[in-house]
Length: 236
Image (cartoon, rainbow, N blue to C red; front, side):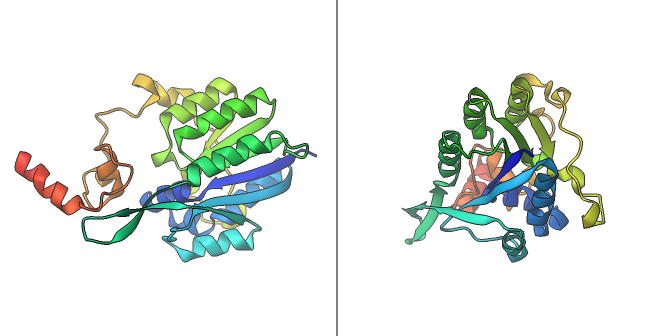
């Protein structure tokens, strides 16, 4: 039987499911991923990568991971002095920690035969190249609304499967939840593998939503977003 490693980009998946209002999946993510991985082979390890400032949007998510055998790998987060006169957490080492772990794991004799990577971040394409060079199999799972078009294209190029969690959202019986229907290359026929620029989602029009600020080049909603919003209106 093939061995399986399950590696979750915790903040990426949690944020994606939360913003897509996929509460059923968000609260049962550990169970869903574990059952899917078991169908692929014997689970050798199941890890969730987070940072020291992780604040769960739904505490049930963390509990569900723990109940289904996941272990957490915590990385450092960077502090910065904000406009309010105090320190706040900014970017963390979660992504590089996860990527370095995957690349290091390839050199272990007991490296799993299949690496299931749960993220929608395009940066994972670099480890995917290494996985391919080491002749291991990989499978990527992400939340469809926040999954990188480039990541999907790269999976297709490397011959790796790429699935969407959001396809599960309309199933009511958790016992029957399975991850089906890989994302097809044709969904990325627009320029550069990116989503069409003229397709604006409602959350990209809401300044309280992080998607609004990502559409303006930010990775998260900035601390001074209210001031920036006022300035935008002035400039208009």
